[in-house]
Image (cartoon, rainbow, N blue to C red; front, top):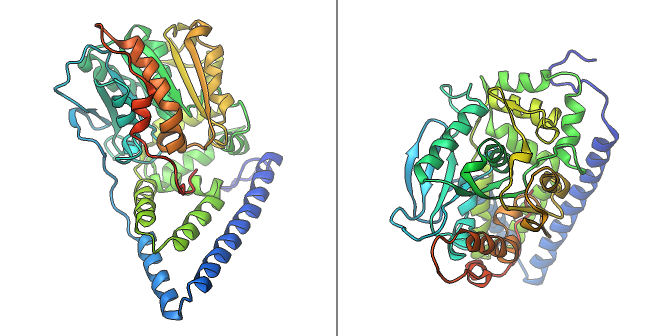
Length: 417
């Protein structure tokens, strides 16, 4: 075994080798296809060398300048700590409906992905479906003061947030926010009215997930690689490191995205959509080092959650304690969290089968949270069903149609993980 800090402790696995080879081929294909499309278009419109220079200049500016992403819907921060904030999307709302709390992903990016834009927003979709008492957690990037934060600290903030809101609540968790919401529901089932997770790994070893392949490659024996990453980050997992990891897993998406931009550089609407996505994707935040190492060791490596072996502060996280209605959403082409990892929750909870919904979108990982197909075709019926279970007084039942209408039909999608 190599003693070099960044050298994998075992030889490259066949699964990783296949991924690298396939990704290399797709990256080359994306580069060729994008370049050919641009030059074909340039010849068709009779572009001069000066025109092409202008295209490249505009393309460079659009790829180089990044801004901090923002939440699309009006909201108020009603509770805050060094780790997280609680956002209320209608502080004056008194509708007789069970409140809903969103757990966004926590993977080195802004939590505002759940309210990505005016046209692509889980927040707007949920409210249009009648879940008007809506809140979201908002993860704060790690600092020197919070680099030792633990899973306990995050669960305590979630508990305080639900106490502030007044439970029980509907929990909706995306990706890392999904397994965190699931852990909370298992530890505090009395606080949870319904549980919905999207793209959230529960069985971290199920399916053919890219991250699982790399974790198996790097940590079957020890955690030295990950500990060195945290040491180099001075106690935190740098958001830029995670970003580079996502890009490395599917570099063909990065190539296709930027060549797509070049091909549409004169289309102001497309340029604006590209900028919006890159502002969110490339504006990173750090994750506490201790929390990250716990995730890698206990969840990804040991798969302790689905095995029933996870303990937090001396309490076993028993998924069978979850008895509320459960909604599970996965992406057919999600290479980060394959559907099998999400749907494993169905076999672990005590919820009656008739109260478990499993849906599959046609897209990938990020598309589950902010993609137009997911927001038009899959989230509206899920949120409408949650609303129907959440009415505390007689009122008209929500229909998916109104929630579907807040997201316009799909057009050229920005290639994304």
